[in-house]
Structure formats: structure tokens, C-alpha cells
Image 1 (cartoon, rainbow, N blue to C red):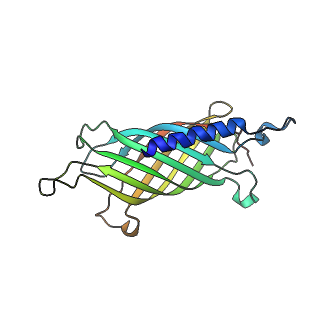
Image 2 (image 1 turned 45 degrees about the horizontal axis):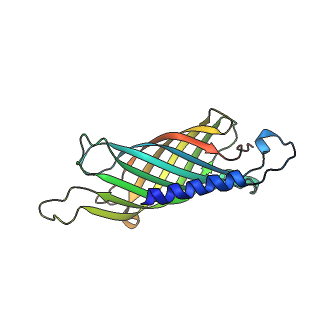
Image 3 (image 1 turned 90 degrees about the vertical axis):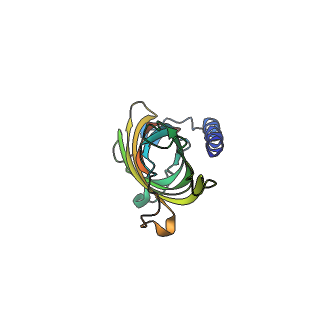
Length: 202
């Protein structure tokens, strides 16, 4: 359900970006005017921190990094992300599934024209489905507020298409994130982003 909503928002953002008027004047490629938005999709490979085993699935994200900010804030923006991991349960429970949807701050170091390292801190809502225990047969799902810390790198392969590699560590149960009782999934996402505007560099 979350992914369907997120996909709809992504398509709407693409439509608005395509309809956004662009100045007819000639400008340098790194200063080209358009909506400073990028949309991406990839595959996530995560340790769900639930019993054992790695599982994988799909991820979607939208980044908005404004151009007109004070110089010391260049590269600061907002990311919205959704992830659904449920496949490859070779060593995990047969029905194990984790869904995450949230957003927050992202900082992209845009000094180089082909490489963009970045870091992010997000707040999210996550759900997990799992096999119920015989002692509590009705308890087979849960949901939590989640804090996410991550970092990664984008590499430009075409003018507006960038490959992306990303690592995230998720803290389930905000208030007790240091507690060993809370799940702490972590893993990698690999994919590609399309920038509606040519990214600007410093």
C-alpha cells in the first residue's frame, strides 16, 4: 500500500517536472534551470535482524536539493524513501517481510561533476511480518517508528542518469534505539537516479 502511494507521488513529480517551464536562454550545463528533483529505483539487500538470513526487495526514492541556498548550505535537501524487502528467504522465515516509508534530510557533496558522496538522516514508519510463535499465535506482525542513518555515492553515467550505491542502518523503536531488544536492520541498496535538472556544482 505504501509503495503504491509512493509510486503515484513519483509519477506525479515526473509529470510536474516535465511540465515545468525552462528558460530559452542559453546557460552553462551546470546551471541549467529546471526542477531540482531526482527520482530513483533500486534493489535493497538487507539483514532484517530477525532470526537469521538476508532478504532483498525493491526501493524507491525522491530527492529534492534546492539550488538557491546560502553557500554553506549548498547540497542540503530532502529525501523521501520507500522500501519493500520480502524475497530470497533461503535462511529466513518463509513469510518474513519488512516495509519502510519515510523521509528526512540528505546532504550531497556536489563539488565534483561525476561523483556525489552523500549522507542522510531519515524518520520512517516500518512494518514487519513474521512467523508467529506457538505461545502467541496471533502475534505475526508489528510496526514501529524508525530512525535511519545512511551514506552513499552517486556516479554519473549519462547527463541526467546517475548510478547509486547506498548503505543504511535502521533503529527500530526510536526511544530505546540502544536496546538490544529492538530490531536494527541494515543493508545496501543499488540502483539509479534520474535528475530532472542537470545537477549544479560548486
